[in-house]
Image (cartoon, rainbow, N blue to C red; front, top):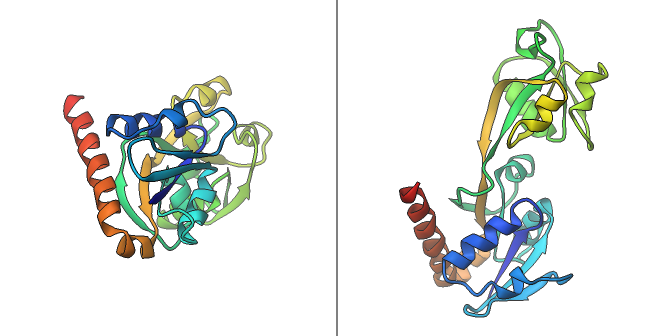
Amino acid sequence: MLSIALTKGRLEKATVKLLKECGYGTEALENKGRSLVFQDSVKDIRYFLAKAADCITYVEHGVADAAVTGKDTLIENPGEYYELLDLKIGECRFILGGLPGRNPLARNGLVRIASKYPEVARKYFRNKGMDVEIIRIEGSVELAPLLGLCDGIIDIMETGTTLKENGLVVFDTVEDISARLIVNKASFRLKQDEIMALLEDMKGMVEKRCSEE
């Protein structure tokens, strides 16, 4: 049996839809109620729902053979796993934003950046050769530049509505992100046939979707 961790929330619905289109038995996931663990009705697969970062933890410790989680989480939480496939779902991007006319990239000296993703922000400015102070924010990061806490923010943007409603603008795209299929390194050896079958099913459906767009 394969055990697959699925990210709760933003990616959940899109992931279940992809599995269903691949011919997997997702009825329990579609009618989940308060349950967190589900059996596929067609394949010998057990699914469970977890927060994005926890999906990585379960894969690293072998509790899950594979997981679907966002590239944003993988960048922020590097670990011991194989990243096998870009699923082309949950697509959005990391952006550098801030108040109009106050582009952090145009500043000299130390730049203060607020973000829920300090590693992403640190890497971005390091590649720019700029000195940066990262201020970690857990809530609405858009508030930070409005109150003068920082020179700009790095955050995930899907539609840009929240940014616009708070009077902020995008200065740069840091990185495009989407959901990825990751697997436990030991499972990739011990359950190679099962994992490769999962990979081929998902890869075929992703390619089919792309060809139809």
